[in-house]
Length: 364
Ligand SMILES: [Zn+2]
Ligand SMILES: [Zn+2]
Image (tube, rainbow, N blue to C red; front, side):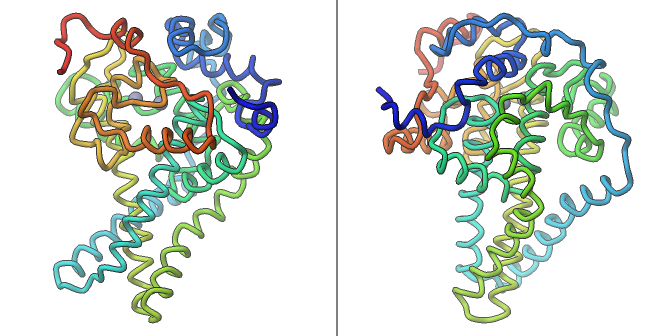
């Protein structure tokens, strides 16, 4: 049982905004909203909202594509790629140090889980509630992943769930035609092409609950600062470990550029590959092509069990099979044991069984 004091400290999803919160989250799955909410012992059923039932073309108009937006996106996406090419060359010439690699791995784990546990499962899907400090730490860690501020990220992602693989989905690979060229173009669009088009975030519509959280608004505004910190931190760590300028540059290269590149690609692959290849053991909307792609389990921290996630988006665990690696769920379980998060929506065996497709044999 959560104490009164602790409840008061749980600032994600304040009680006063529960209606807006539920409305926005229900908007993620229009026709499954009520079933899904009761599936995971969530608050009382709430009818499908005006937000979800409005067709996508009534979203806030997509901003005009600007050269500045495209240039910034190109730097954020291709800069790390270039850095990774240089790092690969250094590795080939045996010029990479173990310390630099360690900095990269540690920051990959921290920022990646900030993204999956903080941005995705906590803020976007409300799979659990966190103490204020825990919430801030998770969101700061996610912001260091360089995939945008928490508010825009969550708004785009809720829109993805509401219009999965139909018109209105910001990054579906299935909307560019069925020809080979169309499929290739769709895959490229889902992977990173969509980033070059400014998205109609329509924040008031999709994330009213997050906008009501002052901490999240402030953290979102600080995103440019987190971009700088994302590179300054590994550079400083590299310098602290080696005491040399070469060590600092190595830290920047591996802990900054390479780490951002790999994490970006892992996230992009969930948007593209996990809607193209893999298994679909759980029922989703007919148009929804989300799939479980086991190969991405480790690098994506369990976000690859995308079919289950689209079937039951509010669950804190995505890898529900015996051998389905989901380190994000493990982190949430540890935080729960430490009482840093509560009201975790863990999967229920009966609900999973009800959502399982009858034509797909259960894995033992
Ligand atoms: Zn998806
Ligand atoms: Zn999601």
